[in-house]
Length: 345
Length: 242
Image 1 (cartoon, each protein chain N blue to C red):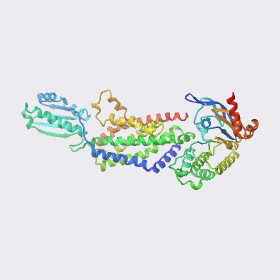
Image 2: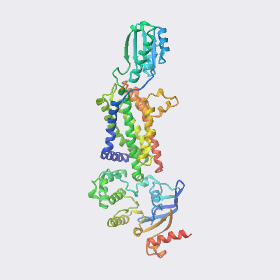
Image 3: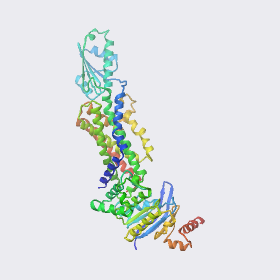
Image 4: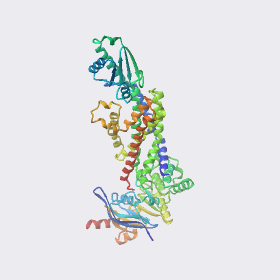
């Protein structure tokens, strides 16, 4: 009842604030479009399995470039490829060569093709039969015409939703405190959890609309690769938005004004970009890598990628969705506790 | 007559700073009790504790025979904060609707109460306007209306008449008298000395201490002062000499 009153009020306030609505719905579209236009690739060290009926060729490859790892067992290689431990499998059964790429990441694809080409060329003087080889290329996921944006796009969708919802929800909740209305609410019998629930539900309604708009825009206008179901993507982005929403309202308790809320961006939002998988985590220092487990965006970004690029369904994403739900619940509980600062009951 | 607000030896610290020291007071049913003191005296802190928002560091507070803070009790208290705690994007009506729903008023009852509270503060014709376009005085009146919606037995008003023109101030006071006659107990803070004369009982607050209490008449007579201001100076001065 009281929560419903709060939800209704938030919806009304939001609709009056056209500019914030625009920031939530249109700004991510603008930025995604820009990134789509300007994006360029980066360096990448691929992992390539070598399977060959000739042990000599296999060990030569392994010596020539440390990207290559000799696998005896074709099935194990295929499994590792599926689990993204490998970027590609090269099968050399002369006279034919078959390359199977994992395919999700265009940067990795390019790096694999370059490494294989370069290594085979360097081996040619010693081994003439290779030049006459026919090469067959297969993709496990994606395809040869996949662009870099197809790989980073799913991640950016998650990121921008996270960023804008975090900021808008945080500032709104903060304003409730600075304008004195929080104190006014605390003079009513409204419980702290009712207040937090009202905020999550009220903003949640807008984040559903936001998720739907951004995801549809990316797929139908920016023509980003979409292998799975759009509903799964919307579900994941929604979970990510609720996480951002609960985190934003929680952190606003520790900000005195809007500027201090903005100061949380470099502390909370920016690290997510670096540690959540947009950049390759494997190339970072070992002690830094576990940080990625603390970032909600790691789970959101991974799940969106699973659906959009690899066509994954519920069985691929449910664990990430559950982790995000867990984050949201944790932040909400902490927020109920943080409100104790303002009223003990 | 029974006491509906009882404050027992209450002190309040914010970190190491002492804001209120050993305050005890009683407010009887139907009374209009005024807390008089300059800004910084601790008036707001005291009424917030009585309203159940803050908790005392030492001592205890009972409202309607129930120790505060207590959520059930809060439905029986109306609170008007010092700042206009309103949602400026919303219309006056939407603000009242929100607060009414929080107190569990719905349907025709809600409509009736909103109409009644709005007419009390002369805002009926402005209810459709967004609060953004309200003047300072109109916002104060809307805050007052919001505090009256659920027909509280106890009304706590923190500086209700700041920035309100004298004519309107008079009409608000008339309203408070009417509410008091109808059985509402009113606790009001003010730093305006002449406004204090309008209260039935007064508590004088200075530097976190209650320096005197009684009816305005008693306070003036016992200090042989012509005005409340003189009486305040007298009590404030006595404490300084000690």
